[in-house]
Image 1: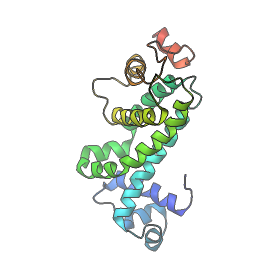
Image 2: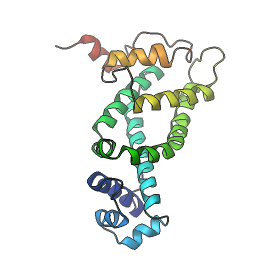
Image 3: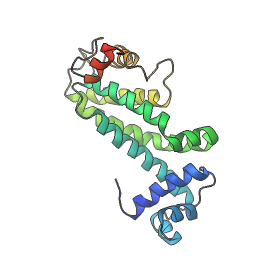
Image 4: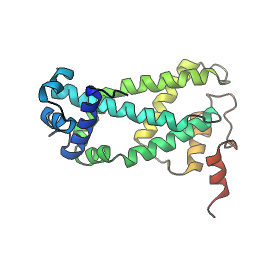
Length: 208
């Protein structure tokens, strides 16, 4: 992640959006929050405010997926990786104060920005999933590139809107992943949770 002036400006813009909203955040706000001059902001974002807002949202999405990758690192199998990823992503979206504020107050401004970033996000997730799937035993007739593309779309759709699924419930997430998302993708997706995942063991034990 960029720790130079550009990254500092992007992080400052996230803060400014949380304070003022997308519509009212200006180049001056970003400069003030970042502790740099207005000319510095324009030097890094010559396209002006629209470029700054667009790249700030893409930057924050990238930070989200970096955290997501950290959360699923070390998962004992592919299904468990997806389960952990969905649970974390759901919680992270729900707990993201800036995102939730904008969703509540300016959804008409956020959605076009997210739509513009969506192909990039999908491509990043697809590229992450494809080599992992290539190491799995796939169902007959399934190829890793196509499976990665489909799974990336499905995962993103559930992150944005869980529908009838409660992604706070590990049991429902396991059912969603193993009996729906991976059914027909992996040759041995199965319906049972992985005993190798310590989170599964805790959930299976139930409350004390």
